[in-house]
Length: 419
Image 1 (cartoon, rainbow, N blue to C red):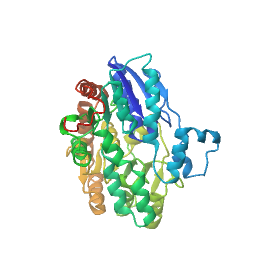
Image 2: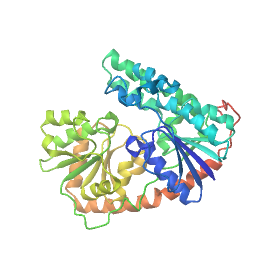
Image 3: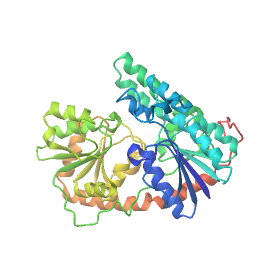
């Protein structure tokens, strides 16, 4: 097949869509399919060995907005239409990237179709209005969404305390746009049964349109090569520690209830880039027991998984839970919260699940595994076996192709959500 992937951010450090684009494009190419990638910045690490990459520039005005009033480089480029839109939208606290990327990508796709054809267009978590116009090309249009933004928005509203915070939450999440667009896609791919239920409930996606394809995992890379001793009583957290949904603050509170010999390593940027964990650790007097690694490449991340005693994933919500899967592939047991799709990744023989936000239960689960090395060893071995059997990228790519072939293009504009 000739596949065109589209994503408004491509770098693996910019969210799960970057990791997904990198590995899915490679796995599709290895199966013999031709892959083009239309992608926005931060751009992915080089994909050119197996895909043709078409970069869609923008000025990253959302990131600039939080640091300075105007971008320092090429300020006159603000007067280009979509850059001017991005500028105005960010000043009103909207997050415009998915919308503006969808229209920019529409133009790029139109030019590409003059000289080549595609069998399927596969959007990765953009769902901008421009995607609906792509249906005019008559090509099956598929999207991957791990969970609806309504979940993020509800969680943010629950934490808001001021009118400014309420306004920011109300305008930041383009949930209405995503709901409108996703109901007009020919096929929706999600990583879990939990994600499927969420999309049906919040976005009213017809169940026959949804394919559950678990995220893939590079099990050849994420494995324990042997010879790396485990650091005693060392916990590992991987993710954005400032994102409330990831629950890092709850892990810091659990750490304060554990013996002083227990240490926590966080794979994320340190203070002052991230402040929430730092502030909570200072308040609880455990700052000296926490180390930030900064951002890591895959080789160093694998070493962290192989050296720690446990991975802890205390999320409030997870659409999949990639760090848990990577840790299990490295024979590292997991303590996690029973939210979203986590229970479909972490099973009773590979780790322990607790209720989200229950600090006492989290600390107790961690302590029980710290006290039982034989159980940890058995969980690690079972985790590796489970990841290889169910979560390899080649299998994920093959199931994705099955979703492609089950997605005949609906007539433009494709507004019948009952099909």
